[in-house]
Picture: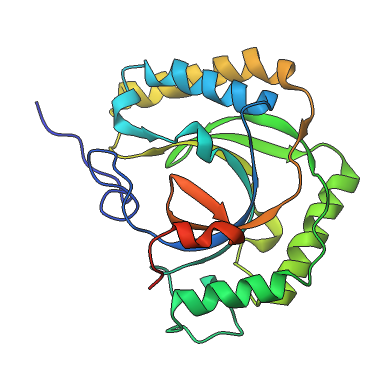
Length: 231
């Protein structure tokens, strides 16, 4: 039997065995905690999907890492002008970038919460719960906050205005066979119909600036010393 082809995530963010590779950076997220209903639902969805025939072709995120990304900032390995701060040189050490982000974002007031709703489960380079603002005021608040962060940090990705909010459940490690693709789309549609009406409104809590060594763990500024020395 032919070996499945690895995706671009293998050797970049993950090993072929699903281990997390060193991929340091920073981002603004709303972390989810075990007492939150969305955390519990995400965990249950993961459990069901892992058991499927295509389950081993994904690396499933540790529940402790569940979050909604509010705005991507920078990654050490991605130093292209469109994904870097316009205010910083492309070769600036990440440790200096971290300090810059801490200083600049201290000046940006963070909203207390972003009420969100589930849009559905999606398969694209992984498995995610797609989220959307619960109402127009929330949409406006998200856009205003992201705009303020962009002005403060100089980071504004090409998808700034149409970024899709989501919770990552898994990254895809290996390409799926045609039958597996059909199965996962069918299963995600079924689970969306089963779970979405039961979720209701999601309170994300306040967005926070976080730092990471890899995709398995995100820490706030006061825990930055728990990570590996920054490059």
